[in-house]
Length: 120
Image 1 (cartoon, rainbow, N blue to C red):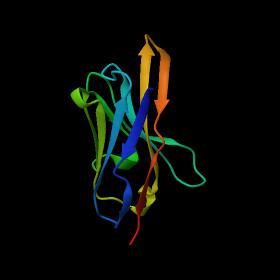
Image 2: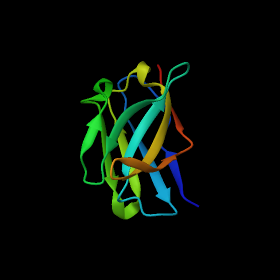
Image 3: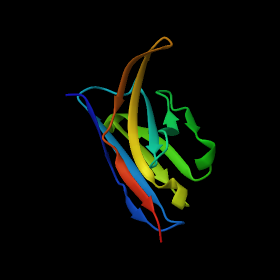
């Protein structure tokens, strides 16, 4: 069974840090673009950061300079290091694995999500 499992969420005070992990299983994900998305209550899911199979990263403007995405293909794992967290970062964070065939999305997998709450 191909699946993504996130971990590392929790409650943190403003200004604090968390590291999210996403372990992929059931297939090799080194060819996938891996991403982190988030969804706050009453809002649409939005891209936080993504990393291509070649290691090129792209962060949302709201997290630039604070969040860093990385991947370890040997471990089939993608990370999101979050620093200087703000209350507006509170959301459920989802891991995504997207495989392209040329420009077409051939496979799009999602994890179950992990809650991040930033509050004093």
